[in-house]
Image (cartoon, rainbow, N blue to C red; front, top):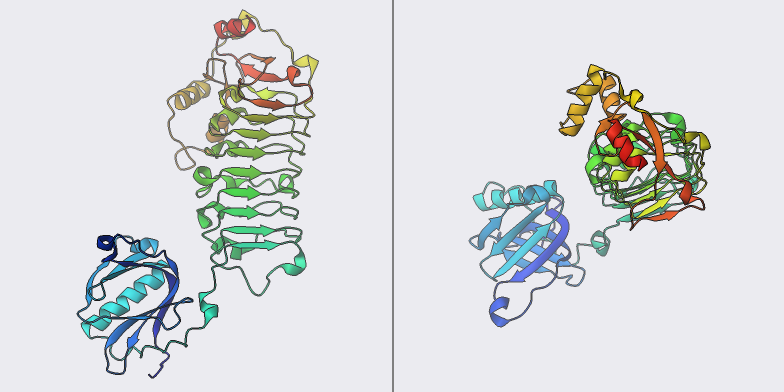
Length: 414
């Protein structure tokens, strides 16, 4: 057998299903790491060769007049199935979509007789080295600057990447090519911001660990609202980042379940934190927070950690009926309408100043949005029955509440 360089070969996972097995009450094999090659035998017959680590000699499938069907409904997801007549096997293939399309296109050209000059002879059983069938690397851990892969780069198959103690000041652009990445751990570095395209470049990112960086010194938080992070991110760890003010954009992370902002310089939290309806675990100990925003009552927290909570006596404030005798500005009336009707807005439909105004809304005890002219008071917060509150002085927790009417205020007082 002659071996030519132009052999078409892909590395993929293949599940071989024998269509005779169901009638024999037997189960098919599971998908395994494989190599599929297209070429010609010595008698010029077109074949597909399927090889695995367990079967080095491989299995040859004749192509001409032997393919019953090729199923390509999920080709854009890198999935296809080739059905052979003899033997009655189905090859369920999964690999990179671009490579798979090229592979199937080559089969079509071979069947049409238009690719006789480009197809090579099927290689013998020993030409594919075991190294090409090594398990895919999905996790990478770097614990020092010396271990950083300056020249090698990062495997595109990673779903978990940990880079610690590497003195990183900016995120390596090569990381933005890891589209399978689900977990990104960048603890103990010198980052002041992250690239705005983080969410769009890493569409599957679900957990970000950023403890011991300097994001509070950068001031650019636009990476939070770009791409898929608003829908995909489940966990965000911002401990020890010198943060004085959490950005209002943080509440855009609608599906966030765990948020940790321990050991920062926070004195308050975003008024609209109640928008984060999926938040269950919130930790903000070792800060200078003296009260919680009223919208926190809308959350269904399971754990709330506020150790080193700073209770301030001057927060106790009475409100009278005269405080409600005012005409609200038109911008507040319009903003209330947008929020109560849950109208969608973004930078394409509203100026940034109005977006900031909408995101600064507080909430009355009845759930109605309120703004700066509405009277403010502070009431005790005990959390829900199922919420575990961790703090030595949890009885002193206060939440800041603005009231839409004197009636709402009177209900809270009684």
